[in-house]
Amino acid sequence: MAATGTGSAAEADGRRRTVTWADPLIGARAAASTSGLEYMQALQKDDVPPPPIAVLLDMSLIEVQPGRAVFELEPAEFHYNPIGMVHGGVLTTLLDSAMGCAVHAMLPAGTGYTTLELKTNFLRRVTTETGRLRCEGTVIHLGRTIATAEGRVMDQSGRLVAHATTTCLVVGPVGDETG
Image 1 (tube, helix red, strand yellow):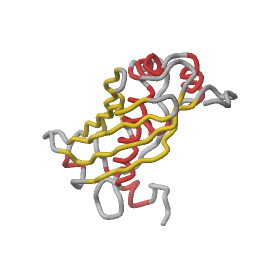
Image 2 (image 1 turned 90 degrees about the vertical axis):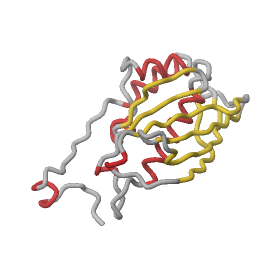
Image 3 (image 1 turned 180 degrees about the vertical axis):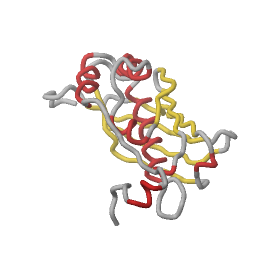
């Protein structure tokens, strides 16, 4: 199956999308020299460019505080799977982003994280008719090397669409073999 998203039928229908993004290392360098919360706040205020995945999926960080991050996403056709609904990977990416950023918002400068494990439960189908989604990630536990968080995706009527949990590895600065 071709993944180009362009073809004569799509172009004739006006279904075409071009995605551009800034150099992702700009944000990575900023993240290395600020606390996680300061970096997340800079992302929220557009002081540093968003990561390419946020641009690709058209999701936005709208709230951040220590241990909590909220993203929003408007479901669109370009999020659809072959059976006419938003792909579960889109919702999982939204959840992973909110939970990971909630963890990051609690970390000191020069410290990062990576997802070790992610468990997602899908409760309702999502289409363009669902309306704007709100995803909140909250930290459950933050240790020296392991963090856990949970996330919830709600539709605009306040119904739970999906929920997830994650385990993250907390990592020190590049070159620091103790983290």
